[in-house]
Length: 383
Image 1 (cartoon, one colour):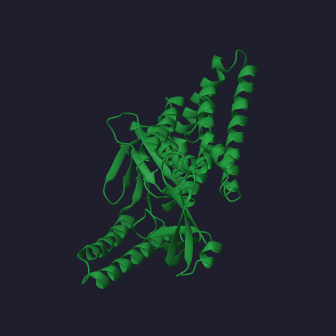
Image 2 (spheres, one colour):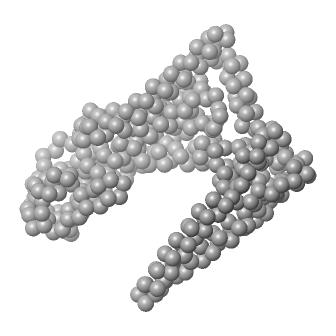
Image 3 (cartoon, rainbow, N blue to C red):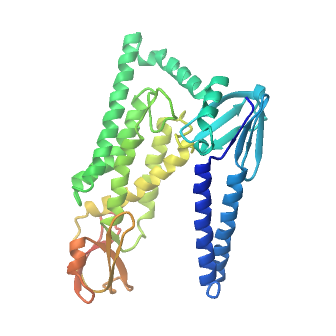
């Protein structure tokens, strides 16, 4: 094949329009703020320069297939591989990776390959000309599973174990998805919150007892099963509830339990499947485990401290100084209240829609302060 694959006309129009928008925005910032802030003026020039790079990058991007080699050119570099040096390819939904058979050569990565004219013919040629490494990995993993005597002595036993793992993963993910829906039903319910707190650790137990069949994340086209939907289905409601439902007065006693909870879940996730080194997004599992652990640690400490707090509350009075409505990923209502009790400065508090309209500027609100189960003082505001 001797053919060049440039960026398609439709993609060029899209990229040029984006460049025009970025250029216009940069010029507006530069003109409007050059007399006020040097920093913003520089940012405006940066945006204008970025628009030029978008145009140049769009014009330079192309793939050329010769009889003996393939060449990929983008804004910053050109990579080339001889056809005889290609081990195989991995074709995903948005990215093509062409892998060399010698580690001393760099692979060719083609991002957003559907932007190229004739991308369908390119992927067809790659599949027909080179080994599909994803399919090789799939068949290797599948054969390893089917021959794994830990899953059963006979073939029937192994198929039964594999089927149970599939059903377990489906059930866990479905329940996690249901948690997301129930978030809007159970506002402040300790039983529901306790279930959320426990659910991520159930994932660890499932992974450990699955004999390697169930993982938190799996690569594309794999015979293994994943339960990331279920674990995030519990952690996301936890984080939303802990961030939106409770206001923390001070964080002095927050950090130690946060670190303990974050490390506990993060380390257990990593140890539960030590051989799973990468995720579907290409990030190391240890990095994803750390993120999950931090989200869980924050949510766990706040919910535990506030949901199960049985201390006697103290009542204070504050005045509504201002209020506002934001529309970032939904409508949110905020009020600004005057200093009260141990809080010496004004505070921005999230309230419900009904509370927002019951508390106009100048009205008096009650602030309910409690010690917290973990000695992290917290408060709520009510009319």
